[in-house]
Length: 161
Image 1 (spheres, rainbow, N blue to C red):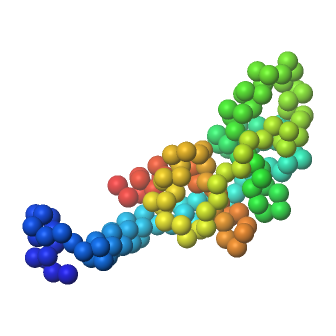
Image 2: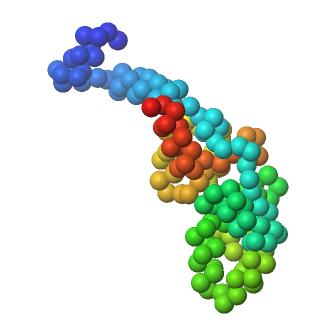
Image 3: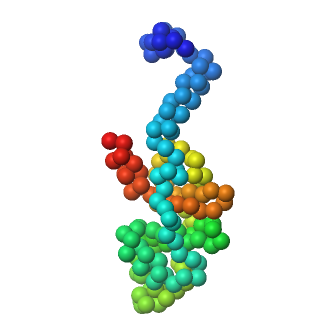
């Protein structure tokens, strides 16, 4: 496709065929994906997590010490749930004794698992997912390898600027 064809499309004097439009979008997608990278490249590693049988106290300690907002719950290399600051705060309001909550097993208070994407997923797909979830986990051959949050996207933007 030549520059004159592109100019005609931009002016609206010709309409591109579906095949041509598909080629244009494929090129643009590959360009933006290459520039932004993949989920595996921007994920925070190594993954910090808790187990289902760990006490909530351990999850809270990790969240506080690491400055995280949430922590995944992993069992056998797969995410089975999550614990967040918000969840712990809500459960605190439901209980009279914080000690009771902190000694409970994570499995009794955890939220839904975070979505998981292959490490080679383009960052553009991750951005869309992060609009509806707190975090995304990256996986390779069925094993969780890292975590992506909005903070990781902000680091990426800073690098690109």
